[in-house]
Image (cartoon, rainbow, N blue to C red; front, top):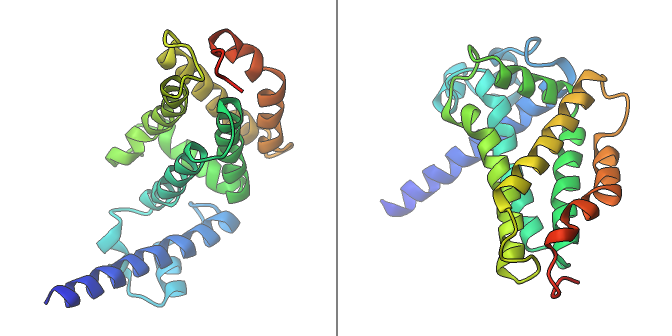
Length: 207
């Protein structure tokens, strides 16, 4: 019985993953408005009802697509082999690069569905900003715990500011219609401005 349940759970995870990957490919090309649930399920070879087993509405797919990936980006940045400043820059640049590679349409759909309160239908929608802010905060807090940053470093204020930078860059990239590289813009920030911002808080143990 236990083995059957395990197999069932694995099959369910695979189905959900397939739906997400298929939806991602279609939305990248057509945008969410131009994509129907029927189109997603048809491309997956499953019934429409299967979609609603995993998602309440079409918009939920946009948020689900990014959730696991951004958690992976955070974990990868925390384990990145380098000093604090390299880890923090790695997180910010990888964050931006992932969004850019997912495509402008997907990012625009995410922004639209997040800022419009009538479209924010799930807890995840409402908590995405907090999750990203907590990730930046976690990066900075780890620097304090490792002795790379001073104990009195204003972790929360710095995390708020850097999250504002990432979200502001993302919005401007959206509004420009992808006229430049979001990832390269973040690299420029990390090279030219991030060191000066963090310098007052680096300890003698920072490399």
